Length: 522
Image (cartoon, rainbow, N blue to C red; front, side):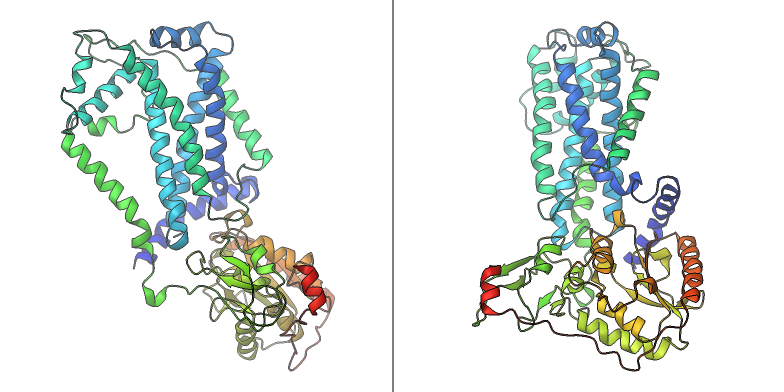
């Protein structure tokens, strides 16, 4: 039930992905890079913040910000860029969080990334809050009073904090110092939490593609020049806050919280936090349907280390063997394994993978598939990733082409492709999800390397590569599959009939390394 609800809720996001792919292509689709976009924007915020900090004065916060805005060289542009980049970073972070939730990439070994992401979101919001208070205009006063009202509801302080804003005395410089300290110190915490956020992934991507990065920064720079930030009215203890340029991204909650009692605000915050913290537990499949971790058949393992290299989550280690073979053996940590199956696609002797999805299991499945579906010689067979592929993986056929579904394209062993071609398929059209949106991070990347660039376990040279086509399509990009299939069919017809073998013999074992070679390898 929960899966069906999430699939329906995800459809607007899938449509947005398809629209962005048409505009920018999957390589530069900003929706596929929201995590690193947020990180890049926060880095830009820190750089501009350092420049602004040179001119900020704790003793006269409003006047110093007014001086930055009106007289300092590059002050108006830098302050505007600082604010716009902060807003964009928050938006990118929220989209990234929603994307991970809708794609159910939150439980198991991915839970650490989810929890650390929530901490990052909290730190970004607090950084934004303290940054706006530093200006000490009307918006800053409202934010400070609102925060004091919430804190006074807790039995922590002997004297209400809100009294500091009643006008009896000037606000102490310590208030602005603590606010400035928090605003400067929290970005250090952001860096530490971000390191934890990517700690369980191999080869983390830390920056967006250069065209996207410079295009994004360029647009923010132009907006900062054409629409510079202006000063709102100064804060005044004896004057009711009037019209002010409230920031919709960091002050969005004010219309909801200001009329509410503090206890109700705290109840809402704790309830929302509790729901977010429970997301990994709520989305974790029942034990009976939970995908099993990969296992290693140590008798087949040749110690080649390819599964260890390809694993996107560093769930595989190479350890000493317990038998007399003089080379290492792969060992899977079930606590880190996400059951993506990419290791199965990388193992030439087919000795590793989730139960039922190893290379050998795939060969059994493809043999049964050819018996029941490959009725006509020369047919195109579509191998469709279950996450994208225009949503066709659940169908028996697409436009008269039989469909063989796989959970992840990276799980696909090239021997299954070889089996299809040698069984008489005119061509094999493999449809992956867009590489920048692979639910298992690197599935399409490694598959493309195995098919065309001799990465272990590579597609054998005896297979005619002209009969193998690799494309990518998002969940709502069925038209992409339609166009690719029509084009591929025309090319396959020009190739003529494919040779058909009644019982294709696929190599199931690799040569065991000789002791001398194995020792040299270590």
